[in-house]
Length: 180
Image (tube, rainbow, N blue to C red; front, side, top):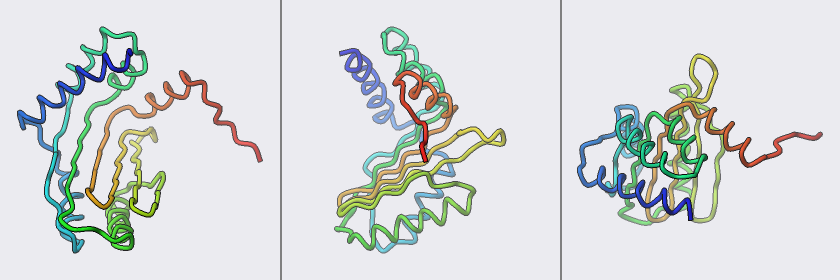
């Protein structure tokens, strides 16, 4: 129930930001998107593309402060920017073409200093998650790409992500020990 109380205002905020159309994505996000579009034989049409910066996140943080959800508060407090792009495919993409697209994205991001965290290849969907650490070697940015038969989704998250992960692990009491 607590999550619903948070999600409804957050979705309203995100929707209003989207409909206002005043928050565009940054040049790095656009470069990656344009590089993908220019290097594949598939046409995409923009469905949604927006960015939430410090102002939007501060507003979301103020709303979440009224809830009892410490996880949501911790996440929003440590984010500095979230960018999302959803692009509809104009034609079906074969699994092989999807893998080629993800590999081109991989080449592009790795050439800019990103490391992939995980890649997933399914029958109808391919996904990859990339990370970028700051000079202090702390996780500062995460780039997520998902491509399926219907759409390409790109998400770029910036902030003090190591704090978010630490908080989630601590609060969920996850055991991440490794046994040989």
